Amino acid sequence: MRSIEAYIVILFIATLSSFTTCVPQVPCYFIFGDSLYDNGNNNDLVTEAKAIFAPYGIDFPDGPSGRFSNGRNIADIIAQLLGFENSIPPYASASREDIIRGVNYASGAAGIRDESGQHMGGRISLDHQLANHATTILQLVDLIGNGNLATVRKHLNKCIYTVAMGNNDFINNYFLPQYYKTSTLYTPEEYAEVLVQQYTKQLTKLYEYGARKFGISGAAYSGCTPAMMARYGTTECVDEVNGAVVQFNARLTTALVDLESKLPGAKFVYIDPPLGYSPDFNITDKPCCPVSTTIGEGQCAPNQVPCTARNVYVFWDAFHPTESISLVDGAAAYAALSTFYVSETRLSLPLSDA
Image: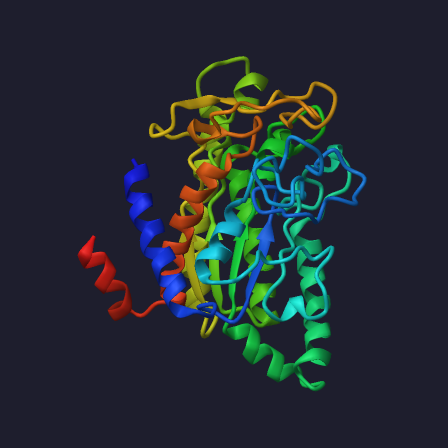
């Protein structure tokens, strides 16, 4: 079991590393994902999957920003530890100059499959996020490539790409039979295989666009979220849901090894998914904010007063982690990505002191 003490050490080491570089450890960082990473791309969509109202953002300097959190999310923490002065901007509002250092394409309710999350309204599926990245590349050709795509691809080869998808393909697709047919078409094992096959094609396309340094997060064990436990009428983690996720993550890790062997110059790092619970936090089965009964399942009710001891809660709303948990998971992801930004010699010094 991962412990909070271990992550505090990782976070301390990572923060020291960031501060001593004075500049970002990589020239650019691109983010693909769902609501765990979304930082504003859903704000102007017609959807229930948005977080642009209080009490979301209660601990974020700018207030509600579109993050499904009381404060920063995992992508924010990774960017901060990589040494970026500010969070990577969302595609929806990134300026022309912003895109040189990276773009966040993540979207709440988005999935590997285009239909995942469609019952909630608008969302930007992974295929659509890839199309948005293609648009970004064309802008970069004009901005830094002097019309030369090869120059831009050399720039992109140096960037870190994190992709965190699959959660909504389970919680907002396979395990919502009233809206989707996938659970009648596939067993959990078959569905995992179908998902990974599509995901592999999507990651290959990202490689073709110029990505070489991939950090791929496993799907979260969403059977332990308050929303899924409530959906199944239990106070325990839902084994049926977590078992399906295990099938997906196992196939994903195998697929990443295969992709790395087939795509010259590519490096794939598997990032352990958020656990959905933690013995190091006192309250693991209840959301910090009062949950709405009228808008998106498991989301905070607008303008209600959340808990005050947010540092001991795993869940901010009934699906998403508190900033405290994102600090833990972001630090762990940053450490997993170390092969892309830290030499073995540099990393060994602080680790030996720890």
